[in-house]
Amino acid sequence: WKVIALDYSQEALDNLQEVANRINPDWISKGQLTLACEDIENYSLPPNVTLIVASRILPYLDPLKVRALWDRLYDSLAPGGRIVGQFHTRNVFRSFFEFGQRAMMGTWFTDMASVQALLHHKNYQIEAYAYSDFWFSSLRDIEFVGRKQEHPSNKKGLFSIHLEIGRASCRERV
Picture 1 (cartoon, one colour):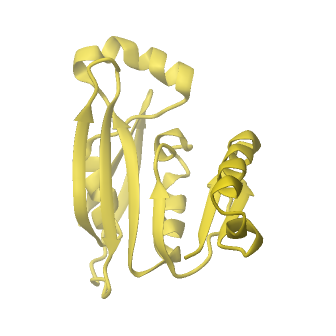
Picture 2 (cartoon, rainbow, N blue to C red):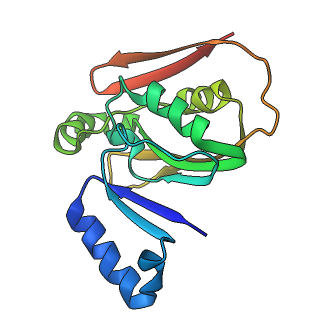
């Protein structure tokens, strides 16, 4: 196996390196684990990746750059490769706190239909899809696992991201 751990925080990567070295110092020295302090929006992903875990990062990206990054993630996956990710959605019962959450954390919000459109646009087979609500938070999470199709369809559709204050919405039109 080979893993690239990508984070914009050198401190987080230093902590990971310390833990990895305690478990097995050969992981880093033999190139099984590569640590990269980079921004995912600018990182050049290698080809034929079998798994991308985009946990707790997608909602914090610049909504205007998500489409280009989504295309690059898809292009780097091998056929049959998977992407695991998560987005935040609005909690309409706690919407008063949404503005504060956005201001403090820099997150943007989407909805279930938008995430599904994002996955279908690139012809991912949705293998898992969950919607979680935490009573103590103003956030609801949409979590997903998508598998890149071995033989993509020839479906050509229009795709756009619509922005509102504190919210991004993706829609696919065929």
